[in-house]
Amino acid sequence: MRPLVEARLVAQRLLTPADSAVDLLETMGPMQGQDLTGILSSLALRLPQGTGVTDVRDAFTSGDLVRGYPMRSTVFAMSARDAGWITELCAGQQRRESTRRWEKEGISPAEVTRAHDVFLQSPGVTRKALGELWARHGFPDETGFRYLMIRDMMLHGTAVYGPFDGTDQLIVPTTPIPYAGEHSPAAELLLRYLTGHGPADLRDFAWWTKLPQRVVKEAFDEISDDVETTDGLHHRPGLYDEVAEMKRRAHGTFALPAFDEIVLGYRDRLAFMSSTHHDQVAPGNRGVFRRTVVRGGKFVATWSAAGVEPFTPLSATAERDITRAVRDYPQARR
Image (cartoon, rainbow, N blue to C red; front, side, top):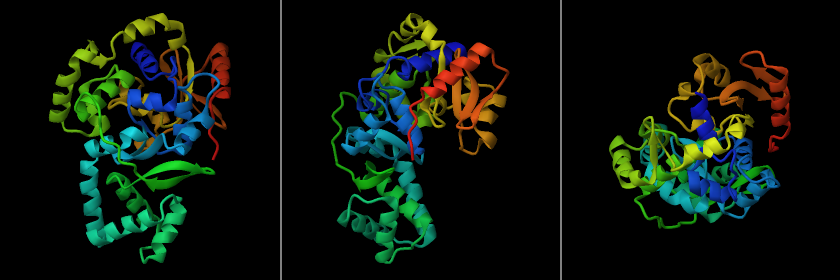
């Protein structure tokens, strides 16, 4: 477990910061972001000292970063340049599910289109304001309808979560940006995933994106010369040399947000934590995750404002290190 976790800490830029949040996401691919404060902190943790949550917020407000629903029916943070092509690549199944959901709710395709058009006539609104706008145009004044329609717009490339308005994000129209990569879109996304998440296998990527295995295999054939393979897991060239160079730091202590890619970026979380510890991180396995602490290449605790809950008794040194990591955590406020 320890070598795998340490290699992933290095790959995910928790030891070698990215130049900017945009650079990070364009290197490693989208990061899970349904928890807004969590994704702000996840990105800030991977930036150089002296930058932080404010810089990440500014990248959203400038339009360089967005959040949307590109894959897995889940919100992810992405570079604005990537949002369109990644969503087009991965959201097909979600779009079909969304259509079936509207049919079940008795809402016609024409009404869905009209709701999209109402938004486009008044872009740049909060979720609450958009719900009120739809209600004035005769749509259900219900939280469920608002959630489903916003999700539908993002699945179809109509809208994204963009600039901040206080602690909220405005929903704004998507700016179409054509894909201009050297590889096919699937191969480009796979290369980014293995660069910024590996060591990982193709099943991890297929789970992460929900792309068909055939598409994943063809994508790997296209970029296989650009990655290395160790013990059946693919990663960026020279990754284990990087780990060796910073072994002591990779063996250090990290306080992480609840929905960080270190935990959620892989198919099998039991590959790097025991089932007992997983139950403490994700009680009942219901999709709600707690903040975690990694120390010495292992997940050793969960943490919150109320304190640290270790999986096993900690030494005095470990307690001090965890206290310091929690103190230095880039907290995003709501």
